[in-house]
Length: 141
Image (cartoon, rainbow, N blue to C red):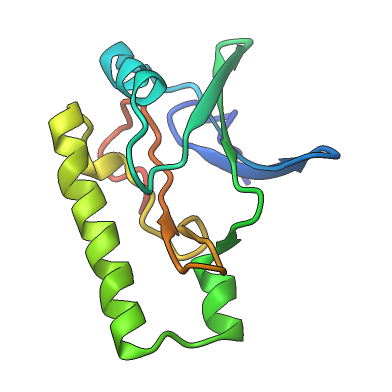
């Protein structure tokens, strides 16, 4: 079984926490488009989880603070959306991806997997993970 560190192009998803916060950490060695990193660092884009980047031994570690959020997959196991809540959630996700192009972010770098789409259970707002890296085509399959 290969890990993302064996194949530096493929991201590896892990969770870390400390006494104050919980983090999704995405590790990969893919090249970083610096303009995307800069856009994410200098702009507060609605519904995109801000990130901190730590580089260790040629591997990028993207830290996303997911404190007070749960994965969409877990949320849907516990509760159901009303029709209106579901439509609003979808509109928020789609509009976030559309707005991101104005920040020169690629729609293909959003992680659109129910395990890594987060939701605030209090107001049902989405929180999307954007990984600012150049991946080989088909990395997510």
